[in-house]
Length: 74
Image 1 (tube, helix red, strand yellow):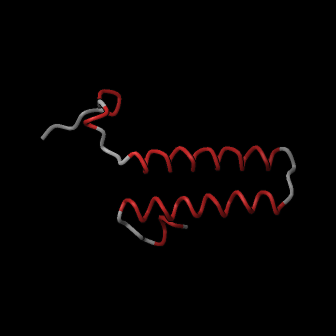
Image 2 (cartoon, one colour):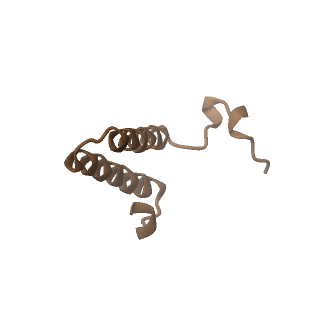
């Protein structure tokens, strides 16, 4: 069995469930926005809220992937 590079995969050959793709994109956005919030001096409550949501998304990703190792959800 040969593996295709991600750039050459078509939609029917996609490796990841679309929900996983969506969660990965959301997590990336949360992490990036968290950094912007910190750089702009947002309140610790706002930064913590983003961090908690990122943790929730990580846990959901771990559940969907089927690997609930604590280090993946932390």
